[in-house]
Image (cartoon, rainbow, N blue to C red; front, side):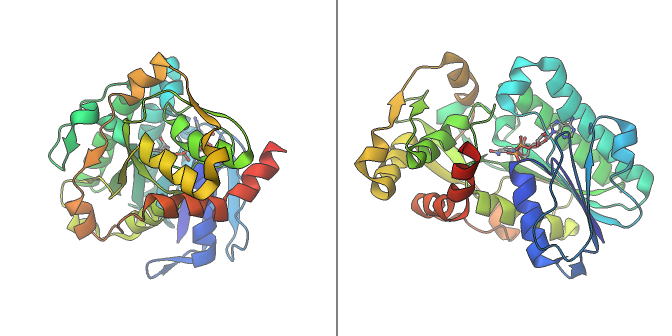
Length: 327
Ligand SMILES: NC(=O)c1ccc[n+]([C@@H]2O[C@H](COP(=O)([O-])OP(=O)(O)OC[C@H]3O[C@@H](n4cnc5c(N)ncnc54)[C@H](O)[C@@H]3O)[C@@H](O)[C@H]2O)c1
């Protein structure tokens, strides 16, 4: 079968494509071809034993989306998106990519007749309630920003296209993925990666929230595992409810600083300083940090490793590439 990854030049797109190239199959099905799609040119993953088509375009353009799915497409991992702070700053672009793009892709899936598994990356940002909230499967999404609203609307599309049998969809509400390699991005939560990345490069990082601030996070390894598990999960086990809160990790900024000190030493910790940023606080302040994850675990999503393992995985998997990128 063909596997298509939108947002294939992005952070998680590259991780998932790399992992699939190593695995060569998804569940019992061999991967015979892969399509990577993005506005920026994707690169084929190393070591793929199947052909990889790297396409560029706009996911909200029906002609571009039509090139991504055919009768042999078994799985579509939909990662293309405008991230939180950018979607908040540019209202039109956010809705264009995050909602119109998702609908356009689903229409291409429907037209193909392939009924593929579509894995949609939703977000913690579909919820609000902030530091006080505890989210379970029954919590109503009341987004506190445009990005969260766009993701919640995308989930409803996944739900209804699945109910109609046009796709077999899964929406994963990803926590903030930390440590993001490379450069800071335009996600409001970008600081959560910066404070665990910049000090290992000998650079300063700035903290826009107090140390008591709690976040719901996941490592790139866990997020990749979950995306792959979601691609093979039995759709019947989900029933009508296609949205899943995977088992992330609740940590405070203080926990992160303690791990930074134990792994990177005092010198690393001294590179982080508190600088107020009301705009960032306004966005991330609405995101809940505590989730009940019994359903995800019952569905076989693996539990998260601890915070120190997450930091050490960044040093192992991504520090060298990040250093090379920064020159
Ligand atoms: N990384 C996180 O912390 C996190 C948390 C929750 C949800 N998510 C979601 O997971 C997905 C992947 O996240 P990521 O961190 O890899 O993001 P990313 O920004 O690294 O990748 C997204 C990719 O989408 C591409 N893109 C943007 N507009 C496009 C368009 N019109 N057409 C085609 N491609 C377009 C971008 O060029 C980028 O490469 C996104 O949907 C994001 O909203 C991520």
